[in-house]
Length: 297
Image (tube, rainbow, N blue to C red; front, side):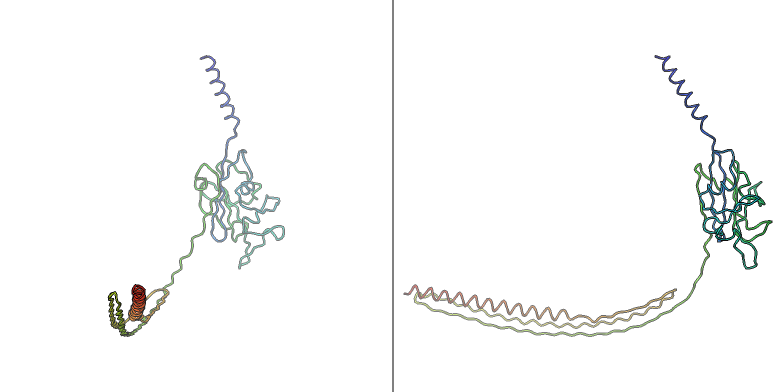
């Protein structure tokens, strides 16, 4: 059994070694692109070939590219949203106010500095560790706009290839307007409610029968609510605001006379209760009177 296990382990090691040897080596190269507004896009491109062309490196970065072939290699007409739409227009269709050509200048990173390339991107070979730069701006055959100073370590910061975009710094705007609003409002409402309600109903029922039951109910109710509400409100807002935008607003609603209404409703309810009580008492006495009459018969 031990011999079999050793054979199995040896075969597994041999297979793993063969798979590792069959996998191609991964090469990496960097692309740095600077647009006319200052935005910088970088890409770390991995490839398994020993070398690729500069145009292939740019196309594999993921950015849309339009190029034109020539005797010295491919000229890049447009990268992303910036450039000339060849063949609808000339590959070098853009001009600045001085009449100079505005185009994509091509550079290679050598010894820590950018070196302008007089060859087209398709005529330049890219190997592991190379960095190519592109910049949109005015120039001539000797040079043009220059990409930012970046190395391969700045572009390929992790093991995974990708595209990184850096937006240009936003300008700082300073606005310091001063506005002062000082409204003064004085509201002095006075509300006085003095309702007086007096209800004095008197109900007396005195029936007399032979059996001599006597029922006397004397209900006297007197309700004299007196309510006086004297509300005086004075609102004197004074505000001074100093800011970019100042809005001052004030509202002074008058005080409601809720207390007087409450007393009026209370008196009305009491009057209704007394009336209902009187009706009940009268009805009760009438029934008693009829009962006594029947008994006397």
